[in-house]
Length: 526
Image 1 (tube, rainbow, N blue to C red):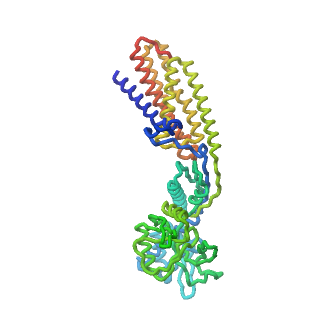
Image 2 (image 1 turned 120 degrees about the vertical axis):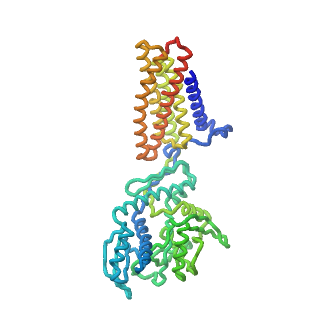
Image 3 (image 1 turned 135 degrees about the vertical axis):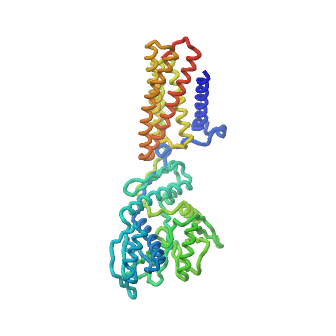
């Protein structure tokens, strides 16, 4: 008797706790003056219900691979120098990393060093090199197939992570950001109203690079030396100018630890940068080796400024100026602080879902849920009498626990999620049907009510748990490989199954055994 009382009290406590968590989702309660006594977690509405924006982004993987090769070239040069040999500064030419070896006798040694320390590089060409007074051997490398595939996956993962960080700072609840095939990323932003600013923040690459300026090359020259490129110089006053930079990237935005908007003595906005410890050391070394040269700050392919390096800069601080407005400086600081994208992205598709469509979907889903629930609630007493009424009460408890779970996890309810709620209504009483039919069979065999309840639950519970576990496994697979709305369905279905098992197997049994202990001579209406 003590065990029955404990299970009954535990069941009541769990159902009341679920009701406490689920009630704030009712507008009449969530928007009332008593809202403060309830938990702050709410069920979020997905893009198809709340409205918002859907973006499909294309990632320029080749640019990311070139950046990876360029940064690898710096490591190659440092490694070769540490071995007592010498090479010219590696440079990018036609998507390949070119290493110039001045002494022909050092070629085999340097080739072995690169092969040992950088097995991800594949030698594709080896030619003699002659440019003016410089002669030697040219070694050209690309990433091998395995390293290329790994770099592609890392790039897409970093794009997803960076965009998520930006959106979190932008304040959009429950964004769905996922990789897709063909180097694409899908971004869903429910409830978004300022679409133009969101596109700017999401789509802005904020790919920050530091490169040396080649003042020895005429910007108007039609033919540029190998290893150099022409870049546009930012001029918000309408002017157009170009500048010649080395292809070698000395430092990137990946080394930035913090970025914030600031103002100079003339109240002009600029962005102040703080490098990570590793980035600060690299910046100190770069400025120390290139005194009296100009260092260009390149953001998304445009040169914002190119100051002359007067001395070695320690402390790891720099700034980006460019006649910013306050909002522009703040937005740029947001994207830099959240992390620069490792490759340029292009918006391939933009769709905006209006909230009126979402409201129509909500109304249809609610109507379907109510109709389904009423049909189930009406049929159960007709077939199983008093036991059917108990099943109806437990169905309400199942839905309460389902919505409580969605609230506690801060889950997003989508249109397929509403379909999961309707499916849960049917599956919730399915377990009760199995149990009631088993109890009927035991009663026909002449068992007492208490014995029939015990046997019915023991024998039916195994089948119920097994069948529901297979459904949960399918839901997990849907969640892992599905897109946003499908994942919403999987979450709702999983929580509904767990709540259904608890109410049908645990709570219902506690209720029946308690009733049987109080009425040992009465026959159960089932």
